Image 1 (cartoon, each protein chain N blue to C red):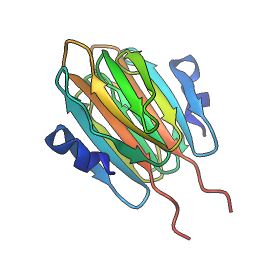
Image 2: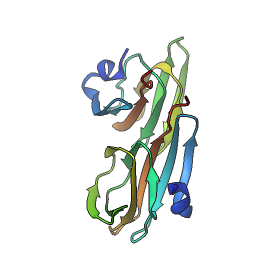
Image 3: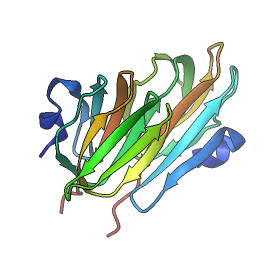
Length: 100
Length: 100
């Protein structure tokens, strides 16, 4: 499932070319992305916040982020919920597979 | 020239793997990156600010950015100076060429 679809109007595609797609995600407290999959991706946290991730196998993990934090993520399937008390704003930079 | 070298201690490599290198750049007012080159890259502006870019041919362009703005950049050689009145914080995400 595609984050740009599962997150509905919380997701906005800000760059989309043959190398990358960049999604800006804004979520109010209590909102979730819906279960979705990415290939290789980079996540940039623009605001501080707390989140709970549910993985495809049902396991969960809590995380807390600071503004400007950036992480690498291998391909993953998960659902992310804003468990903090403020709106969060995040950029997801999805790398596209090189053309053969 | 490599931004991580030309910008000296203003540049910090925060991710470096076979797909991408991510540099966090912090520059005080009046500071410059030094002339450097990137391949395909994405720039995320974490703070608002004003900058002047000098291209390899000597032409200049002014820009003003907002926190959370993200842009795609084709390969480029330039020098960027913080022309605002505040410290700026920027992430530069350099895509690496796929291995043959």
